[in-house]
Image: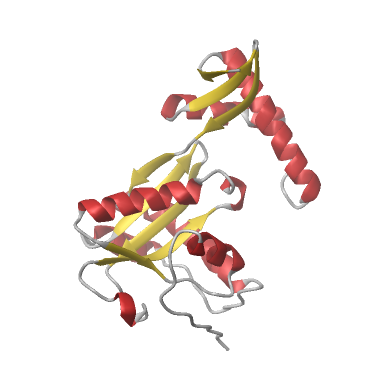
Length: 223
């Protein structure tokens, strides 16, 4: 098998067919997912070939598998992204409000709040973007009062938010966002990256514990 760069229309069509078939199988397991046609995937793959990279594994003249990635942008000091980020933040708040986390009074930040956040030179924000718009974000700044005292230091950059839309999960989007943020933190002179997450959020706990070592454990419920 050979690895090829996906570029021409025939290869795009084949990659779109693979993506559609994977989506169809996933939807068979989760019927709440929206119904899609193969034509829905073609513009997305075309966009990725223009703005990013899509590689295929070719067996003879047939593409059997592919991999592609999202463009990661640094939204530092870019207030125009506040509206989309506020919408993603609201999705994160709903996720935290639902079972099993059940922190029902969680609210995402407002557009004005995001404008202020993005204008702050001490903050770091990266987003994942697809053809449909923003699909994920990660943000960090120096530790707040509610961050574990063990990591409070001027050399610490504290992650205080990460979210990826459900349909974009399983494609290393969160890992790419985190990698971009860590790189930016190192460039700014930070020597420690910290994160705090809800221990009763199984998705967050699984993601962060595979990348960070815990220094303290807490359990919070709000009534």
